[in-house]
Length: 143
Image (cartoon, rainbow, N blue to C red; front, side, top):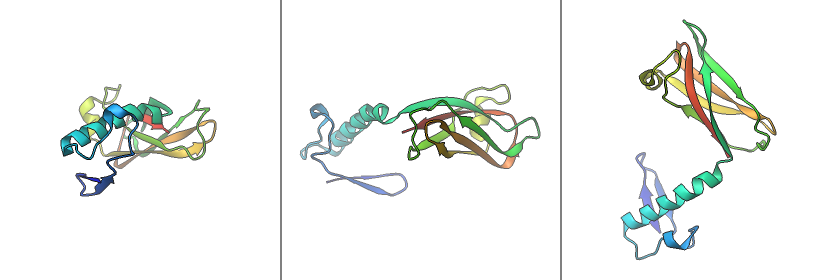
């Protein structure tokens, strides 16, 4: 058993055998910790694109100044999405008409995704505790 600790202090226990997707990256009981972690990372990098069903970007608009505390935008055209699909969204720091890259990081925006509608899509939500204005770039994905 390989035990990996995260920054939050959580410990992930990973069996060293029988876990793997391909032989060249098989974690062996004789591997050093760094070799085992490298092999697990390689497998994750290979598997992640296989897990993601769709991804894209959207602009979340809090409106003209003074703006507001809540914004949302519908992601449609996702014909393969099902009711139990997992959706996620996050801020993507890129220049918009209203904000520079630094402002994407500095604003207190919390982004989430939900309200999945099978065969259609989902909604991306933005929340700012202190209020903000304008457009922010958001990236989304679902599995």
